[in-house]
Image 1: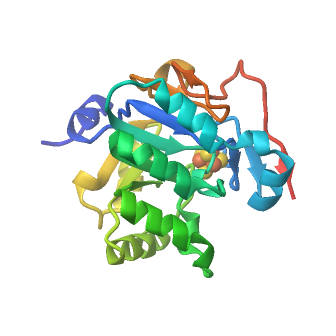
Image 2: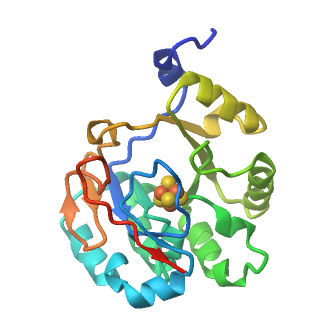
Length: 235
Ligand code: SF4
């Protein structure tokens, strides 16, 4: 069956509907045009953690928020900002995993191409130990190249880590272009999301969102026209 409309595409592709989103940091080391997270842009993660610790979810706060949820979580998604900038991300993943049937780590994945991977060994171990699924953003906005994705997938397969490729585009044409750049990935590993143009179109987790302050809220933290601009650049 040919895919001719966004509706066809939505019916054919996997979508993403987590029950719980955990926003572990409001910092990111990229600045994608069109990002709707209210991030602080931090080239140097250590520096932003030192200067703005309030942008990072504390383990005690996560523990308190999780204790408000009294049933088994089907799907939890850990995001930011860029969640791997959190210096205690391995610990946080280890706290969430026992509570959920599936845990996704949403990432732009540049850390998986690091020449010096030693700082990420603990995170890789935590991912393997807790069966975390790495959800890689691959679309026009995130700018990851085809060859880079190929290298990342080879690395994850080598380490027996499960993954999904999240394509978020504004139109069928853009989706088709991006999908052709990762045609080596099977459909079952692809998650397609239409790019949200307003807060109403954002993913709505059934349980809610734990924000960086450890508050359990109905919706995720976002930045659209009416939300104050929070971007701050750190050298
Ligand atoms: S990598 Fe994701 S969170 Fe970071 S700026 Fe880009 S879209 Fe936003």
